[in-house]
Image (cartoon, rainbow, N blue to C red; front, side):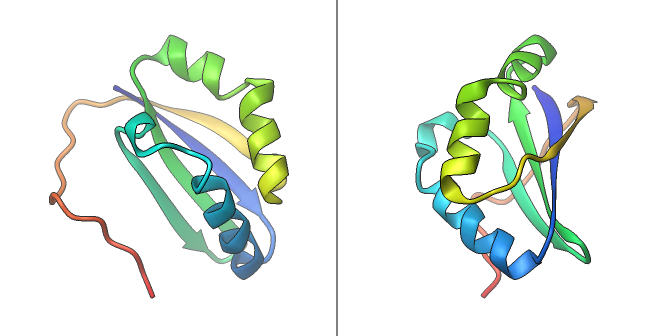
Length: 97
């Protein structure tokens, strides 16, 4: 598993609305590990791909950026993080309210 980061700069409230629209287009079966973090100047997504090669193809694909744009998200800054050594999480979904 390889992790990548997508940083969106702007009003976090507006970005989260667009993010929710974006995620409605993504089937649960396509997600192995995904997290969205609100920060002071926007939001950041940490997302997994099966390999670095898959990440490089996916994270630069016109289809991905098209889905993001359709949802109202600006083009993010994309950064590779690296290969996962260990991932551990509870079996529930956490969503801030």
